[in-house]
Image (cartoon, rainbow, N blue to C red; front, side):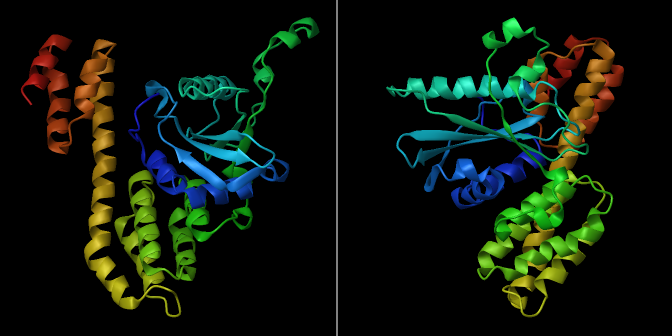
Amino acid sequence: MTSDKVNSPHDRYFKQTLSHADQARDFVLHYLPAEITRLLDLDTLSVCKGSFVDRQLQHYFSDLLYEVEIRQGGSAFVYLLFEHKSSPDRLTAYQVLRYMVRIWAEWLKRGEAGALPPVIPVVLYHGLSCWKIGLTFEDLFELPRELRPLVPKFEYLLCDLSQYSDEQIKGAIRLRLPLLLLKHIFSKDLTARLPDFLKLLRSLSDNESALEALEAALRYVASASDRVEANDLIKSAKAVLDGKGGGIMPTLAEQWIKQGMQRGLQQGVQQGTLRGTRAMVVEALRTKFNAVPPKVVKQIEKIEDTEVLTQLLREVIHVRDMEEFKAVLAQI
């Protein structure tokens, strides 16, 4: 299995939301077919640790695995693969199959006996274009009838957020808000929509949960969208927190605005800047030298200082070869 490291703000928000068992149950209940959820004892659903996504694909996919008991006996896995490319990957079914096989391999490692547990694969997608590729593994082939029995047969379930209206996004507030933000994160009108999305938090009776959800939402928008300015985020948050009749006390609102929110926004923006600058350094090296050794990429990814990364970007212009750049990198 791969590392648990989260590589993008989309992944981070996805995992922060759906790593909570209650929100995972809510998602399964509302976004899987009823004929499947009827078979599952959702009270037993638990989150499994680890990831099955290949390291080189972590910029495009993230995943979560849940184990749940079947009402008629035995257990099953629900595998949730989050695809955050701007358009669907034609080979998604192939990736899903690879990860399903890895799940069964891990199950066998545990020393389990008997029949293999079913894996229910679900793809969650929030890209710009709607999902138009086939959902079955067989769709990847052009086969004569005689060869079709020799190809694995399975279909993954799809949750394409672009095909849901805002009113069709169901579930408790702690699930609905993240799904709405994931759906609209690339939208041109996100700034205008954001206050209404955040106002959903007014209905939460637990102040601490509401503030936690607000902080996560603001961090996500600050680091994942270049369309929303920090001042817009502050105004949107104030509109929610200062709203009378909501479950969030004005005193807590003021405390959050003064202390937590500014810090959260700054960290979100800083993380987005770091990721972008790291990517520019690697791309500049690749452009100049055609290839970048994986070890060099790892060293660059560990740098947490934007000024250092900017200096490295300048050094790329002057160094004559990769060895010279490695020497510069070694001095940091």
